[in-house]
Structure formats: structure tokens, C-alpha cells
Picture 1 (cartoon, rainbow over the protein chains, first blue to last red):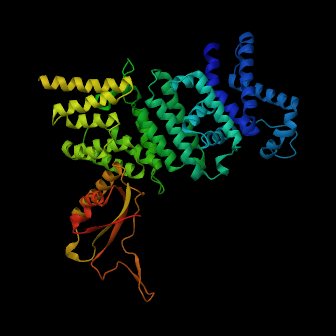
Picture 2: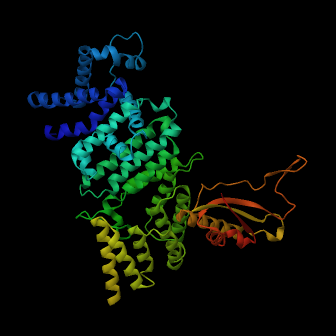
Picture 3: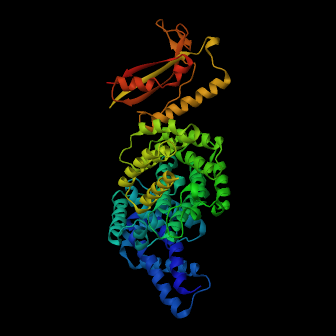
Length: 415
Length: 112
């Protein structure tokens, strides 16, 4: 591989690993030192490799250099004596004169896990947590993150730094989840990972590669949780199943021009069977214990959507799952989806009565749903609904879908 | 927006009032859809809570007997707390309650 690609790729995979290990060792207060050492390591790599050629095992080279730089740093700085040494004492055996910077696979995994719990701390807003996760847990640069958020670099830079400062202010400990109360904290962690995934899956960003990377990173983090005994919970597996099922349709849901292709119009041969199978595997692993999380319900709904053929049983199951989901946690989008499922189980007429009770009059999906339900009963009424939806829709891709619906209705009227 | 307690009662004792297994299955589905519909309208003021069917009763002489309370034929099947503007809206919601299909009734109380 050319150096040009090699270093960015290594940066993506190795940067966050070494940062996690060093942060785990130093504590959150010295996160900048950890980041500086690792950035410096990558700088050395690009300089040295350009002259001497790429080493046989680039990752191992990075680890060795990072270790040495850390040791040198600690020797040079008095800060070490006064502050960090006390932190390290907790993490390494006493009477060990040489600081152990352990970059074994096991310690990397442990440190990453500890960092996931630190980054996904509710002291920061959801948005800040996602940006920080992308930066510290996924090795994304500021420009990539601002691309994903459709925001500018300055904003993202500030957001990430503020989030880091907040973690320091609150003195959030970087602890292995085995030693903390996982049950309470896992909810926030899973929520942030799911938001990270959704950011990739639903983002309006046209950069498909980047969006796929976001989804893949969310799945990688979830898998880290699954590989650790104390975080390998039913809801973790349910979230993994949900992401596998969604991802199986990634190729089918975007056209070459970046437009979203709706479920009904997707080419089923583009669905990824391997991911569907993986999703089914994790879903079965999630069905233990007594916890029924919203991820279980959403994964169940996503599972039924991997079966394209419309059967009565399919929609009855989906309606039941949506009923449970909306009872567990209200959201307008779940309310609308539930009503759609109801139309499939009962009839459009009954679903319209239910839909009108929702009264989500500032939501364009609400009018699109009504338009959809009316389209076989009263085309004029359906058109009115879609026009309102178009007026309320904000993004181009939403507007395009509504315009397509309107065009189809006009076509139907002429026939 | 006010909060209302809805208490569902029906006859769980007399044989002739009990639904067949098929009716019961259908009945459960009605409940589920009704709860789903209320939740979709964001009318549930509290998470749903299930209650056991039997219960216990403490009487005036401090005696404790196993439920259900059989002196009146109808016993409590469940209760929920909903959000509604006024008694009219709460009553309109209660009129859709599946317990009525099995000859039961709904008592409504407004929270202060």
C-alpha cells in the first residue's frame, strides 16, 4: 500500500487505540497530552517512513514509538511527578519502577471500553457526545466530522473541545465498565452509539462512503461491548441486530444520484443477506432475560422488514411491535409508523381515523401519511395532504419524495 | 391538560361471563391496539403497569383474605392514568375501552 493511503488508514484505526490506552493510564485531565503524543507519533511516522520506507509491521512501529515518546515525555516533565504519577499508581502494580505502557490487544480493548463509557457521559449533550465519540473513539478528523454533521470545522472544533473540558470539569473517571454499575450507564452508551449510527444512516450528507463509515464505527463499538462480559447484555445484542438489519439495506436505499429509494421501491437483490443473517443471530442472542428494550422492539420491526412479501402475519407482528414501542416511549415518528402498520392490518379508512387523532400538524410526515392513506380513497384529498407536506418539508430529499407522490397522483387522475 | 385515572372493572367470576379462548385472544389484541392508539396520541400519563388478577383484601376487622373481592361481582382488571383536557375527553376515550366489549365498565377520576 502507498504511504499516502497507509497513514490515513492507520490513523483511523490506531490513533484512537493508543489515545485510549494513554488516557486510561493518565486520566481524563491529561487527555491533551495523550493526543499530542499520538499526533507526534504519526508525524514521526510520516517523516521516517518517507525516508526509510514503510516498516514491516506499521502498527507495531507506531506502538513502540508512542511508548518511547510517552516515557520520554514523562521523564522530561515535572508534571509527571506531581500529578500523573498518582493516577498511574492506581493502574499499575506498586513497586514497578518502569511505567508499563501496555499496548496489548487486551489492554487496548479494555481501554477503548473504558473510553466509550467516558465519552458517552450524559454530562455532555447528545450532539457533543457523538462528535466526541467520532473524534476519540473512531479516529475521525475534524473535517470528516463537520462533513458528517453538515456543519463547519470551527463549530465542530469548538464543540469537541468544550465536550473535553466538560469531562475534565466533572472529573469523569476513565474506568473499566467491569468495575462500575453497568446497568444504569449502558442506556446512555447505547443511546449515543445508536445516534451515531443514525447520523450515518439518515444523514443528509451526500458523502456515502463517510456515512457508511459512521455506521460501521457504531457497529464496531457495539461489538466491543458485546465482546466484554459485563456489557454483553440483551439490549446490546438487540442494538447490534437492529444495526445489522438496517445496514443490510444500505446499498438498496440510495440511488446513484444519492436520492433515497423508499422501502417499497427497493431492489431486493441488493439487500445484504450476510448482514440479515448476522442480525438474526444477534436478535436471537438478545432474547434472554427479562429486559425488553426499545432496541428489541425496533430490531423486531427491522427483522420483519427483511421479509419483503406482504403477509397478514408480517403486518400483525409489526403493529404489535409498534404498539409496544410507542407504549414504552412516545415519539411522533413511531406514532406515524404505528398508524401505517394499522392501515396494513385493518384498512386505510380505519387508519385515517386513527391518524387524525395524532394531530401532528407541524410534521410533514404526518401529512405524507394522510396523503398516502387517502390516495386510494379520495385523490383530491390525498393531493391536498401532500401539498401541505411539501410546504412543511425542509430537506431536498424529503421534498423530492413528496413531489414524486404528487406526480403519481396526477398521473393516476389522468388514467 | 389534566390527568385522569381510568379503572377497568369486569366480572371475572361468573362462568357465563367469561370469554372463550378465541374471544380472549381477540380481546387481548383489542387492548393492545387501544393502548397503542392512546400511546400514539401521547395520552398516557404514566407507563403502563400490569397488576395481578387475584390480590388480597384487608377488611375492617384487620382480617386478610385472598382476592379477588367477590362481594361485588366486578373486580378491578387494571387501571391507567391518561392525559385529557376534561371529563368529556376522558369519557370519550373510555368509551373506546375494550373492557366494555366484555360487559365491564370504566370508572374515571380526575387528579387534582
